[in-house]
Structure formats: structure tokens, C-alpha cells
Image 1 (tube, one colour):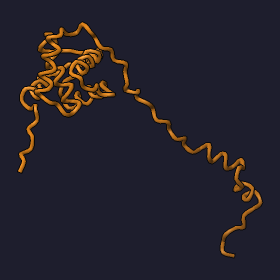
Image 2 (image 1 turned 90 degrees about the vertical axis):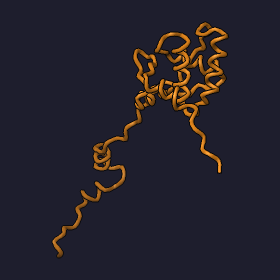
Image 3 (image 1 turned 60 degrees about the horizontal axis):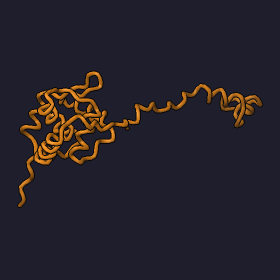
Image 4 (image 1 turned 30 degrees about the horizontal axis):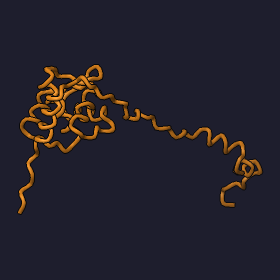
Length: 154
């Protein structure tokens, strides 16, 4: 013989589908992890009617149109910069930023909290006690880098 032993009847039984041995093997396999949901990102932001006067809303609309932000980070930076200038404070919750988006007739990002996180990662500010606090880098970007230069046409 070639040194191999013939399978015993026990080995044959163990290889049958649904057998106890197969169940033991399946039980020892790691189960697929279910992905943990970080949150829907969709908060029910509220419009704060008393956040700005009508004159301030008009001023915000003009400033937003002048800066013409394209990316969501730029949009939030522009709104936060102007709100800080008008309201005399430098931290804003999601409802206040949402109210500013509504005032300029722009769509609020679906995951505004995620945008705050992205901006924090880029060093444009931080979130403290669920309030967005832009820093000097964010203000400098709004003052000096927006509107973005348009490519020259040939």
C-alpha cells in the first residue's frame, strides 16, 4: 500500500452534510461582524426665527453669494464666519447653521455633524459641547481664498 489508510466508516459519517462534526466546524468559525451604525447623520434641525433680523438675513445672503462656496466645508465656513461677525460670538450649534443655510436658500448638508467632523480633521475648527467653533484658519480661508479663482479660458 502507499502508506495511506482507508477511511473508516466513522470518517465517512463525519463528512456527511448536516452531521455533528460539520456543525462543530461551523460553530468554531468566526461569525461575520455586523457593521455598527455610527448614526444616520440626519438630525431634525430646527429653523430659529429669532436668530437674525431681516436686515442680517439680507446681509448674509449677499455675503454668501459674493463668496460663492462650492464644497460643504466652504459653505459652513462662510456661514459661520458671517454669523460670528453679525452675532458677536464664535460658536454655533447645528440649528443655527441650518437656519443660516435656510436664510441663504441653500440646501443644508444631509450630515451636518459629519461636515463639522471633516472640518475638524482639516484643522478649520473644533466641536465643543455639540457646538461648532471655527478658528482663524477657517476665517482666513473665507477672507482670502473665496471665491475660488476660476480657471482662465483659452
